[in-house]
Image (cartoon, rainbow, N blue to C red; front, top):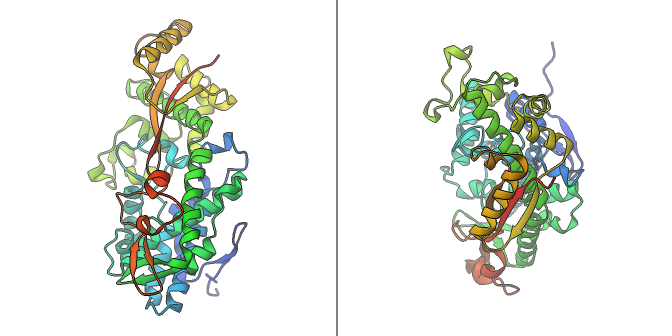
Length: 415
């Protein structure tokens, strides 16, 4: 039997051809943990607004790996020493950075696994994969955790201007058709450099960075936090919350095995990868690694016929795209208005106090194109001087244009 050819070429609609450059990269791409990302939509329920937004975390991870390779090539050309094993570790780190996402990406984060970010789940899955691969991901995990001495490798992976954001803005713009989100990723990557071990952007790239920040802000309000998407994702959360409540009260609710496990149990995060004898020796992590969009979608189509009126109603509305009406406000809704709306819905649908939250929800959504709580973007000037981006941009006030903005929302049935 001949040696397996692990140098594969993947045709990506955004960048063209992407290759698996090493045996380890190939093995990671073909692992079930990574293949699962084929079945998790990058933008959750956004396809209910933008029909083209059905691309996946699998495509995004490959695209981000492509940009990571290009960034490393640029830094090497500017004299930065990056060994082949360091490059491989960085490529695998960006491949696996989203492997811990659950069904419909951010839509169900903290819902199925309470209080655990997808980054933590990604780390647990990397550590499990590392055991399978006899320690080949040691350096990858160091980079992912920000513990590797060459800090700029982690900054390329996760920072104010990382290859993750460069890919998802360009890719999400492509698939939604929202051209305002397109960023010049090639130009930005060519402007990267390293000073004192930290990632910097050369001053001639500052206008491209400003466009990147504006594009990110625009995409959040126009796509990621579109009001109809907010309504749909909150209905999905309510649907899963009701299913959890029913299963944990003893109702025999049909659901795929992996999904049913999380509806029934609240796993102990300290022993997330410990096999459970009562569950066929599957660990919570193994169940999580089987979960994808198909589990939730098929369950919701089944729950349309549930005896529980609330679960059946929410499920049918999601399947038929009869979403709750959403109201937006720049300030919190007055208490008397919320009370009025709650009483109106309660009377119309003959609801008890415990049932009302499944029909009326109020919360806040936030948008921040640039975080002042994280390490700042550093600009490198021709004379060797460096300064924070917030001090270097002449076109706009960073606090005014990129700080946190909030919108309050209220959702309820309109029919």
